[in-house]
Image (cartoon, rainbow, N blue to C red):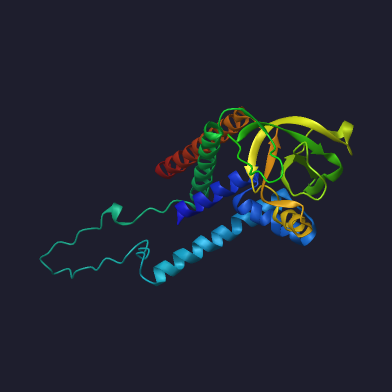
Amino acid sequence: MALGFVGWIGWSIVGAFTYSGPYRWAAECQLWLFGKYGVISSAVLAILPGMVLIGGLDWALRRLGLVPARQPIAAEVPTLPVASPIPVTEPAASARPTMLPPWLIIGLMLCGALLIASAWFAWRATTGGRLRSYSVPTEGRPMRPPSHYLELSGTLLTDRAITYKTGQDTRTLVPLVASDWRSGQPISVYAESPSTRRRWGMRYPATLRGRLVEDGLPGFIAVRLRGQGVLSARHFVLEVGWRPSRDRKLAWVLFLAGLVFGGILLVGLFWRRLRRRIS
């Protein structure tokens, strides 16, 4: 069960940076209900269902006998009469299992989640692919990007930009289409937050560098655009400004945070045992 908690928390941490997984589910529920979402509330709503789900699954498996039940902390040791020729031995000190303190269990879970998130970002930085040049295809041709890391060329439609709130911030998505795009044709690529404010409300050619993510639009926006017939069945979001070095730095930050946090836990555990020996 502890490994399940660690995996879920790690998945939620990754989702908070990449808008995916449980974090995305929690954020989109708020977007559907309120038209915006909060970062902290989304993180809490992403973690709590996993705790309930994994805890309930563990309880059900134990009730069905598929997982051995937890052993009691201490069992009564029967004593023999004094007159018995068999000597009575005291139970070994190791017969009573030692339980880790709750703060240490929670801390180890969080430390493991940070290390899992670090490994994921390191993996994404190494598998993002080399920088390639690509142009948004014309109507009728499928989108076949040669890499996730692209210099994508097309025409920005800043007059059709979409904005929505994420807590205190505002995200902007601008359509990036082929040069021969005509009004009424479906759009397959949206660029996230390009620096185009000085030419807002215009249409002009642009080449943007970033990471291409399939199905990156929030669910409620995708449903609305599909209802209007302006979104392709297969769509992408270009995270403008993304570089592999950014993920590598984030991986190192999470890795060092996990190590520091784990070191603090070990020092706390050592101090706790030292105080017990002294007392």
